[in-house]
Image (cartoon, rainbow, N blue to C red; front, side):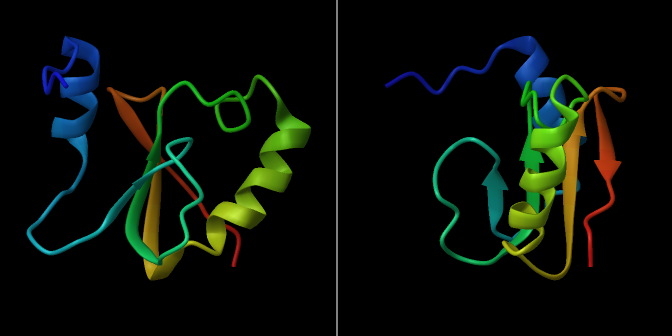
Length: 87
């Protein structure tokens, strides 16, 4: 398995506020059965505005995954933007 990242994905990962010990969930990578400190999504139509109805439903489910104070980032900024999670 290759560990090489595309330049775009490398820029996204480098833009995340990562620190030792946090757990990160990539939206679309699996069921997300554990709680996380940070979640991010790249090219997920439900979150980038392409499918707004699906986005409303997805945000409710995603909001259940992070620990209190957890954060969600999606592509579309420079290269990421933080998205508010419903409380």
